[in-house]
Length: 327
Image (cartoon, rainbow, N blue to C red; front, side, top):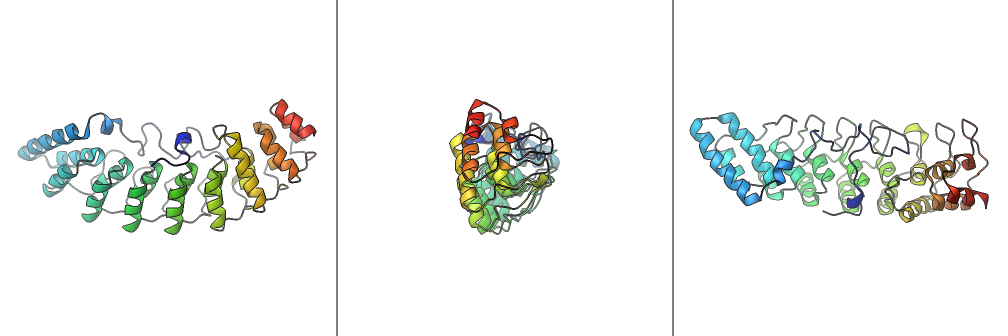
């Protein structure tokens, strides 16, 4: 599924509460190289037909050799490559539905990550546990959301998947959907009972992820779901502060639109974070001149000094910001 933010997906949801870091970094909770939530390249290295034929041949050999555990390994491969007929044969031959690979992934978690709807439906029909998690604490639902697999998400939810089950970093499926700007997934998850106020271990909630990446439509959906535009999150940051310091990969127009939406919905320009900085200072430091202008028009005070005695002008990243502040 190609969502509004598919071109701006990053490597992970970071634990850092710093606006500049904005969900990027080695400590992130989304897929990282070698992590339990990676999509192994081997699953896409061959055509599905060729791969499935090879699995079918391997099944016959392993059955003849009586290698029970090897059947489990083949089931992982079938789940990852989308080989439904071979998966059915393997289960009938004794492969374990709840077998785990070295990352703690079950066949269901693998199929969900790769978006194989028929495999997911089959495994659920074979009573695969929908709530199992891997070593990262990620469920099949979270993995499907991370990969933007809308139909798989719907299958899992209809089978009773918990929309609020977080991984070990406290990241929920709704966090992942908002981080990627997947508005349709956000709506689906909210309709299924996802908590729009839940915070991860770094003190971020879904609206923070959306605001910080300039996903205005997603921010609107969350506000419509009852999220308080002035709620404080980690380091006393508000959604407006995150929008004011939006990520560099967010187009300026989208960042501005998010700031304007939050202001229109009652976000206050006066609150200070734990460094004594308001949204105007954050926008100035990040070089977002359009956001600076919008915040000034909304009544932000450019004379406020932070905990180090600096004003927005002192923090200004470039001439465009300085010119905006000078008006």
